[in-house]
Structures are given as structure tokens and as C-alpha cells.
Length: 287
Image (cartoon, rainbow, N blue to C red; front, side, top):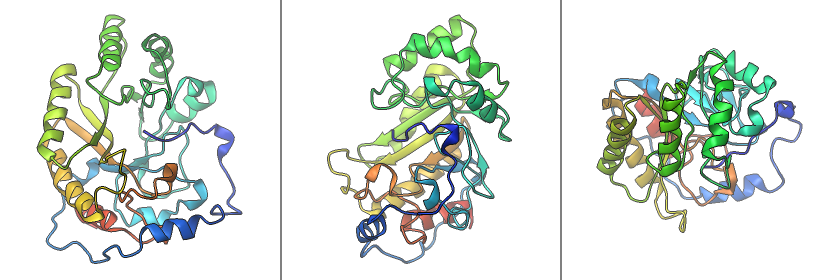
């Protein structure tokens, strides 16, 4: 899902922090949303699992806003971090173009000691790679010495992923954990858990759920912010209980990514305050 690869040269000085009209469009999308702090919510036992995907123009991302979520880690679909203080940065080698000396150097020397593999290679609108292409490039990621997350496909149980993992094992390639994307078409947390259990049973490796949220792609406003916050809370406690789930990151921090203004999943509102989803996330991390 989402995120375009950004070259290393894309580290930008912020002279024009937002595109013209962005604030008005985005703030209007949040008009009327509840501002109360979630009551009676308890933190998870393992808050270190909880991170988030940050996909927004660099000038829209501010440390103080992200810090209020109390997260342990984040990623941004890139090999280089945002200008943030606090949460640990986990780099990604997004696609074939990023398998380059510069990107691999940045990713391989990140303090996390972890690299997330290719982003939705089975999706023609994302990194769009064949299984053979991904396998041919995988040794370059292995040579960094970092712990490696699998390519994150649109379906971790789909044909692309099954073929990749089978052939990687045959070649004795190292894949340390499975990266899972899960966009629920309903609010059934039990269904989410059963999917993860099936992925774990299939591959026998730890799991990072690196993108997840309920969404109806034909009706982005179908689920209210309250429904999404309730799902985030219940599913996060489920993920916390599953020992084979090492980390999880809700999609996403900011609503502006991909112009999804009608989707109530953002943790941070355009004015920098936490949405109900964001306040629920902060409650889960104990902040």
C-alpha cells in the first residue's frame, strides 16, 4: 500500500511546509470529529511492539506530534529517516531501484539493525517485481548483515509470497521474519488473528504487521473514526498477546498520504493534534 520510493537526495529543507490549499482541504475532513480522550482504555503489556508508518511530505512531519503517540519505532518506506527524535527508525529497501550502494549503506547502518524488504512487489502500482527479480537482488540485502523482513506483499498467503519463500529456502537465502499487510474489509478482530496464525503456520517465522487498518477501497469514509479507534484498540491487544508477532504498525500517522482525505485512519490531524485514533494509540502505549 502507498508510498513512493524517494531518492537519497530527497532530504529537503522546509521553506514551504504545505502545498497550497492542503490545510483547508485536510482540516475540513476532520470537522466535527470527537475530541474527547478515550476513557477506560488500558495500555498493552508490550508497548515496544507498537510503531507506525509515516507517509507525508517531510515538511509536514513534526517530532512533537509523533512523540505524543508514545511509539517505540516507525518506518517511512525509505532507507533514510525523517527528522524525528525519539522512536527508532526502521529502514526499508522499497524496490529494485533502491538496491543501490547508497541506499544499502544507509539501511544497513541504521541503529535498528533491521531492514524491511520490498514493498508490495506483487502490486503493479507499488514496487512491481517478479519473484525471480526479487530473489536475484536479495543477496544484496543479506550482505548488509541486518535482520531482514520479507517482501511485504498484498497477501502474505498469496502465490507471489509462497513462491518467493519456497525459492528463498531452496537457495538458502536468509529471511528473518515475515512482513504482513492486512487491510480488513470488516471489523472482525478474530478474522485478523486467524489470518496471522495461518501466516505463522505457513512460514514458521516471526511476524511484523507493517500495514494494517480496516478499509473499504470503494468507500473510504465507510468506517467512522470511532469504529477505527475501537478496532485499533481491540486488535492491538490481540497483537500484543500473540508471541510470534514481534512488531506492528498501524496505517498511518498522517491523513495526507496519497490524498486519502476521506479515510479516518490518521493518528495526527492536520492541525497537529491527535485524532481519536491517535489518542487511542497513545493510551495503548501508556502515554
